[in-house]
Length: 313
Image 1 (spheres, rainbow, N blue to C red):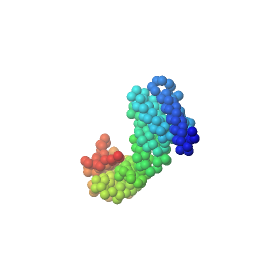
Image 2 (cartoon, one colour):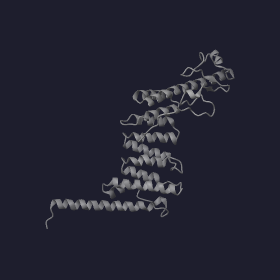
Image 3 (cartoon, rainbow, N blue to C red):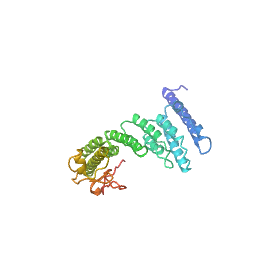
Image 4 (cartoon, rainbow, N blue to C red):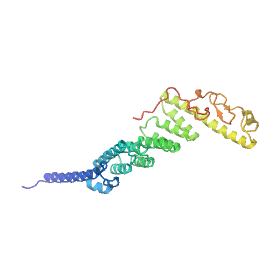
């Protein structure tokens, strides 16, 4: 019986599919060696993406999904066992994202697995940063990846300046969340970058019609002015001390020494208070929200009763 061209194409496609399926099954069996206590962690699975691509015969998305599933299972198993040993988590995520650089959940959730300290995570913030930066390089239009990057810098590394930069870059993307510029401004303020924070809060105020967000920006601008005023005044006090050998007892002493003019006041017109130990306090901390300076020792920064919270869905 003569084979028609259509039948030849069908048979060839079937053969390719079966070979691909066979390769995928081989990869699955290799990965399944990760079962608990069956083999040492070092000898778990195929690591080479070149080999995996050949085995998949083009079905790299399928293998990426398999590796992502195994990464989730591995993290869950180690977490459940209170192991604290997550040495394979980063390699699993690396293979996953190399096979499919557009697999966004692997970046978003994978970074959350990697960054926090045990028992909540693997305690590998460096690996979380590398994973997220790889994701951004291959998905530069995804603002949520910039959010994840800023969150890692903020919560795990306490690097406010880099967190601010990440949030700011994400805030400039189409379709970004309204709270991204707010987060950027907050981080810049934490980092002491007053000019950057002021610019970001002004931009936030001008770029939204949401009354709550606009009021929030105004309150932060007032707090920013207080923080900057007090930083400058405390520097002046140290200069006065270096020059005279003692702390000033009043702003009049500082004025007579030529460092200031008049009694400095906060943005709402209330005079700052000079404390005996050289610190500066605001007259009433409850009247200016979000300030980080000018508070009595041990006091928490005051918050408004209904500050808008980010919805990052």
